[in-house]
Image 1 (spheres, rainbow, N blue to C red):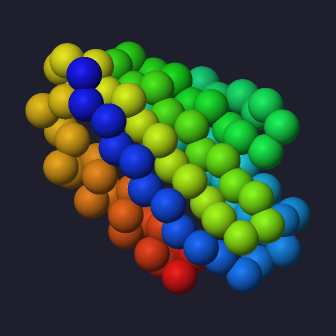
Image 2: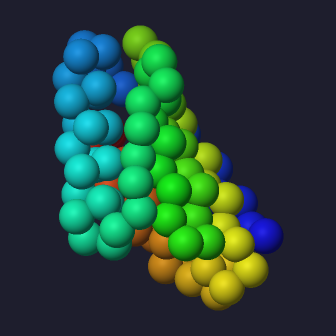
Length: 91
C-alpha cells in the first residue's frame, strides 16, 4: 500500500471550501465511479484500490489517499493530479 498526504493553507470561507469539496466528490464519481460520503467536514471517496479523504477547517485543506497494491503503480500520476488541483483551487 502507498499513501499520499498533501496539505494546503487557504483563506476562503468554510462554506466555499465545502462547496468545492462537494464538486470534487461529484467529479470523481462521474469520471471514475466509486462513491463518496460526508462525515462532518471530511468527504470520504472509495473506489477500487483507492481510499481517499479530503478534510478542511478554517485555514487548511488536507488530502489523504491510500492506494491498494495495483493502484500504487499510479502513485506519481495521482499525486501530481491532486497537487495540481490543490494548487489551482487553494493557493
